[in-house]
Length: 416
Image 1 (cartoon, rainbow, N blue to C red):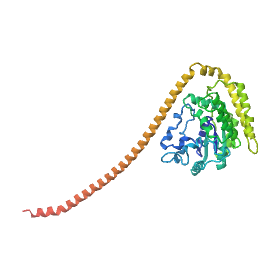
Image 2: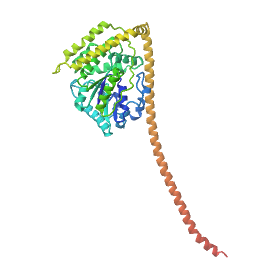
Image 3: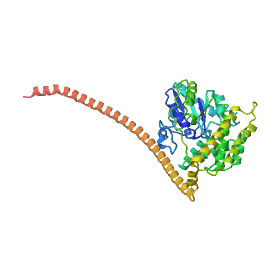
């Protein structure tokens, strides 16, 4: 089973649900660039305790499931760093095929899970552009994980304020490699360089990108899960039953707790946003050149994204609008935020450097332990040889004593 999602949609929490079942081998973020050079001794560093502001569920470190596959010099076989973003979209677009390297890599993951007698569940936030290609290559069940785009955007903001610009910058890391798709190519040209920090232009690019990706995935997905709906028992039970049928074993989705963060973008005109988002369905219909015409499921998903975003934004502005304008609109606050982000980034770099040094220390410790084990073997060998020499000496001494006894007797008899 494959689970496709955007960033900050609860994908780590969902993967933790599969991890709880020993009959399932759940792979996290299968195309993450970290996996290309990951070493076994570094895996414990990717724990929830080391995650900055992400509200990740507790449990085993990320990437633990890859440990049996890691090469001696690091990395998972067949995986290369460019698979993360440069291969986000197949060379021939959404309907294209995976590269041979991607096929070999994913096949390795699936075969390993089956070899150990478990159901493979492969998840990632980098597969929304190649979900159709994965389905063509491997079949299986495909699940689209969805979160209200406004809450998703606020989560991007939270991590940005905490010092992690990674998620905001993924927008700019994805689009330059999607020129084979007309809409994404035009989107990249429409707002060049606008995707480095949370602002109005970045929000618009974020919305268009994700709504389009969800639109393209609806005809691939065998099931769409709205994570914000998992607090509804009837909805949750229905999702559990469908996932359990896909996996052939029970899946428990209990315990999800929704959260909302702040948005630092407050210069939004509700009427302008409604007009902008109301035009998206017609825009996608005009772009869709498939023989069967625009996807009804895709069109329904576009309307859902639009309505969910506008409703959440309006509610947020009603309850928190004054507070956010007061906090993020005061003179000099941006400078103070920049300073705070600089401090957070420095601490993050210091932590990363400490991890590098810790990994080097672990590696040095491993080498010393190997040398010590060799020296202990040498010591044991020398000790054995010394014991054998002592035994031989004692044997020779005994032989000499036995030979000297008759001589002593004769000499005693010859005494006058």
